[in-house]
Length: 160
Image (tube, rainbow, N blue to C red; front, side, top):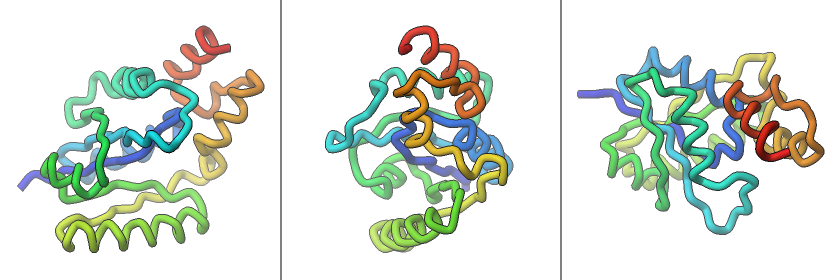
């Protein structure tokens, strides 16, 4: 059976921390779907199509990775895609507490068929979050150390 995982998030924007979690997880899974969740309640800085394009560019040469959008519970999206795993990155102990609760809820909703797998962020990336990066972008700061090159270039050329 194929080991398929969904890496869910809003990715507004996708950071180098996100990228490295996915790249490290390639050794664990046969396929990884980066699932960009659609949440109309949330105000995003970048349009969904732009976020999807950026992530597709990053992984264009990686056949084991797909980038998709979804508008449903993550466990339902996993079922729809035939994925038995949810991939999540952990930066801090606060992340752990939040992710532990979400993981337990997803396990119940997934009727114990879907497991959440956690990878620890590299120590040098623990401070990087999309929230922090959005703040730097808001004030037109240099984001090149926080997001993949293609995203930094596009934001600095077209959004500043």
